Image (cartoon, rainbow, N blue to C red; front, side, top):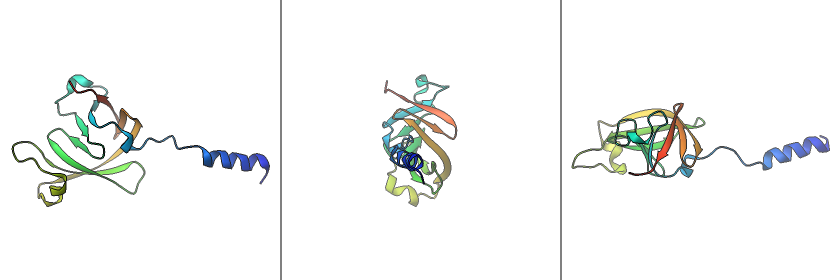
Length: 123
């Protein structure tokens, strides 16, 4: 391998990844870009707690899958007086699961199954 080729390999290995991890997302409410923040409180809302994405009136645990940018959400209904806790999700016979592709674009935006979501400041 020549000097130019070895320099290219070293440059490639030393260049940090351009991918943003979901853990770098700002916790809070996100809405699809085409709805915008005026949709806070609506069905399109996703809440990110720093680790998990939960839909409107849901509590979800988000686990990474083996495929790149793949995640599985296991969710339960979360409205009413008896609010569930994350540790109780697997005990709920009515829990649901869904797989998604989530790509963080910045600390305030991500794509969820190819739909762009943007962070919304709390009203």
